[in-house]
Length: 201
Image (cartoon, rainbow, N blue to C red):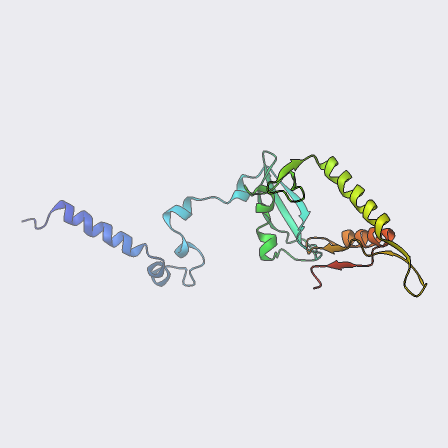
């Protein structure tokens, strides 16, 4: 004599399979008590492959986010960056990256990344695109004009100062040591005395 229905039996088998598939049950009954291997895998995650496995090549690079200079491995497929990880061969970072460095793939592929020069005219309300060469020429012209208008050869007591207070430099944490050195040289040559960096404030 058969009791129950086929649907009820398959339901019990399904529940048992789902129950045994729970990570905590796999940890207790399997060979992964810490849940760092097979116990942490689901059927979906077991079928996934890392983006690094599909890369055509790996390029060594340096993280651009600060002056520490952590090493990175940049995984490239079809000339597009697919993943960025820490370089274990780097004597600086030994494979480690901070949260910004770990997310630097978004710096390259982020859909909201601005890839053109954006300019808003004085008293304007809209941004417009400018060619990079024109924007650089505008910056140079305005800096030289400001320097000429605000140049101070001597102070109120007649002491030679050869300076301008018309512009300043505020660097950011993504500048490396060499870039900061060159910025300091440039602004000193222009006569600016207000040279600061956001990373020190």
